[in-house]
Image (cartoon, rainbow, N blue to C red; front, side, top):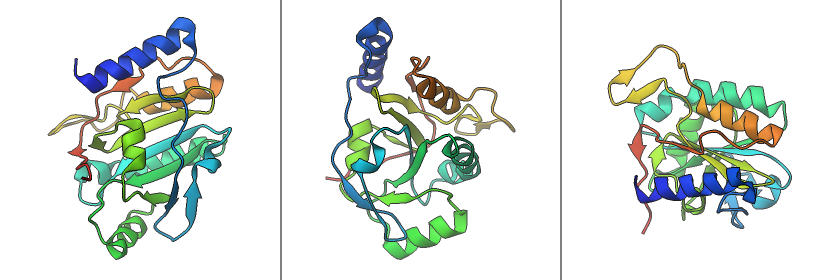
Length: 193
């Protein structure tokens, strides 16, 4: 088990053992613009379940998941869950980011995170990767969206396991997330120096 997996496993064990929270309780303070120029802050998260999708413009797996991300955002957005994309590649020019968001028709704000504050907060390392943040427990899930892509060159027509949806459902009902971490498949997030 890698270091990140061990930390997430330990956090999930604490949450399920009655300690009631993951190791990471509060979101960092931030003020980030999205690709339309609107500013978003950590204050928007207060009292809400939040889902982050870690993305980049040139990852075919990430781009292939946009329709499912939009479906999940539409379904759960009506239940009060807040959704944000987080652009992880800090070297892409703003004009290219805006074109990408428009071309792929994202249905939620896509944040520009030049210092990768949200990547560091969640410890995400893959595009696409999803994170569920509960207002009660902090980060409760990190990992793949579903099992449609099992590995490079290993994809099925439809997912049979929906870890992100399961995590959102659990968080909305106040129950522990059954799997706090599921290894995502995709393109590596290049950390900023």
